[in-house]
Image (tube, one colour):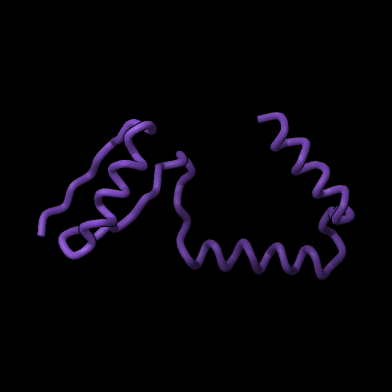
Length: 81
């Protein structure tokens, strides 16, 4: 089996994906991920970050907001896009 990396125009993407999905016996789609520019982190670094955040929360040092305020802030951000 050969591997192939493609950059496909947004207007053609759905058609291509439909074609590939119709031929699943001959095609194995490995990933559908666009590089977002953020560097990857290791599992160990992720564990350290989560542990630090949990400890910050448990100690009361983490700044938190009420759920509804957080949702409002997310909505405002999404509407600004």
